[in-house]
Length: 410
Image (cartoon, rainbow, N blue to C red):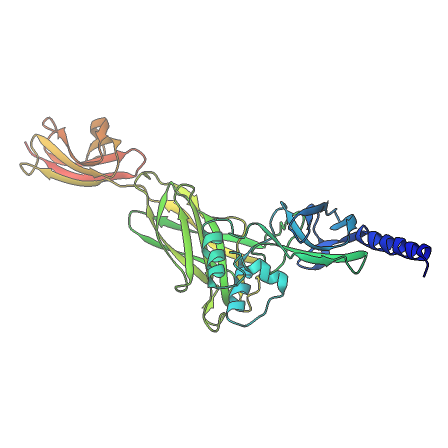
């Protein structure tokens, strides 16, 4: 071979090598929620990393979830994704699915596994389940894994010039995979109310539902009249029941999943849980207040499916007011000069005191007598009253009238 031919062969070989190294390639694809092509994810940031963990290029998904990287050199890459979209619909079904997985009743695909791994340690354990039930639902805390998780994609452009990939994402905790761009506004839970009277004695209230068949779980967010009642205890079906009371806002959160070996075989929806309450010390008048439902609750049937169009039975509170405890002592007996009223009150207040003869005629009156919290004596001078039987009436402001009888002697 002459030198000319050798020179040309070398030039061609070098051209092919150079052209291979500098070849420009394309990566395109779509981002789907839970690998569902009918639910693409817009506004996702996609970053392409080389083997040295350097960012090579950045792209963004459009309203159809589509993205593209153009003019990418040959090489091996990792495609990573992130977004600040609102999270998916995390509810009791997701917690139930994690529990079923832990019991070995169901399996997860890759994206369901990512959603269930809320503490992002690469495993699904009861720690993830407790984090969903207690930290998320009860405490309102964020998941350690963050709001969103995506499955990374590895792309090899050394043997091809074009790659078409599908990126799957999930909001953390949404194992069921229900996410809509505008959010779900369907609220199938309604409420019915029954009236109950509350006083200083502890009263147990029942929260039930219109579903009288077997259930496997429920969670409800309620408000209650914190100015009228104090919640002293909440009891659910068994030891798997959790609740949280916020006395500042008057919010009660409850959640229960049947963690037995045969969930959905023991408890009926007619009675969900019971709340023990008593009237607050500062409630002195006859008032009304209600328990109300907030968004985000559901009841699961014995197959762990959400029950549609269910009504929750809630109490409507009527307070009786704090009544005075009166003791009347006369000395001597019958009363000759002074009538002593011993009054015990849970709060400071004022009272009007009236004395009537047996014909119903008002014979003496004291207006705006100071009543202090605790026990005190109120002395009434009845020296000038004729002998006979008399009635007294104490009208505590904001309370019902309290009546008694005494005898006057000369």
